[in-house]
Image (cartoon, rainbow, N blue to C red; front, side, top):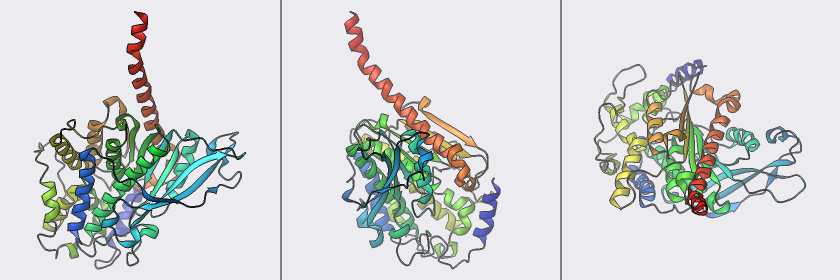
Length: 432
């Protein structure tokens, strides 16, 4: 159903040029602050130290589903009921966020026995990150309910600049500046990694899988790498399931979303407005081969103009290969093992006729596979249709849930193999 992508492209072309309904209608914004936060994210995973976690964690009231309302999501004969509880916390990126965004929020979805006995501790926890415009919990909550059948708990993060975390002057989910976009992504990475650390403390040895559709899948890929560096045995316990996601935010300006950007405003930006971020990116001294580079063009094949090229160069900071190379070079300089942190398992889902992401889906899988514990733990699934059709309710059971479950299955096998390898010498010794 790629016709939905075609329909969106038509709608995007008809949004007014000077409107606050266009992304970046305030230009580049405070790029100095955005650069500091970005460097903080890279520095956290580089040093191998934990993030600041979730400070000031507070819980709301526990909500239970009405009897029978969600009984189907737990399977036939289930004597458990889904529970929902919202948590608030001080964002690890609070110093860089607007006031309404400083307090983070996530919804914890799990289950408890109907007879009032204590709920079991989850051994599988999914961290759900939002697609563009998914400001609240409802859409991802439906996925979380389906995952309960597989004994998977869920933490659903509300992004900065979304829902009650949105500045009053912001229209819906439309970010006013390039700096706000970079800040949202970097803060989302830190917050989701902090949630993973909370889960690791609260439920020791539970496996954690980051997941999300589109933007959420791209942020999930970075968040998983940060969490893998911060959690004990993260290389076997942390995985990622990105759904129709991209390796680079430049897809944001080369696909159909190109028409939602206020190019007339960005054209007037000072030439040096992104210099502080450029300095950070210069640390990546790796020379890519021609085959490794993704040549950027508009969706119709036209080359980018000067304004578009400048934004693409700025957006390169959110490229997963770029982030991985920066992590790798800094970690090696500090005496850590060469390369980025390892992931235990990956399942990526790509849509064959995706008009939003273009060439970057293949690059994402290549980068994640290289960061995976082994090629056999990295899987790519292709589905018919386009980008938007992946969000349809029918795709939940057909595509999203199976992909997430498959990552947990791979992580479970990793741990079994680790136990087998650890116990093997003792068995051999007894035979002697």
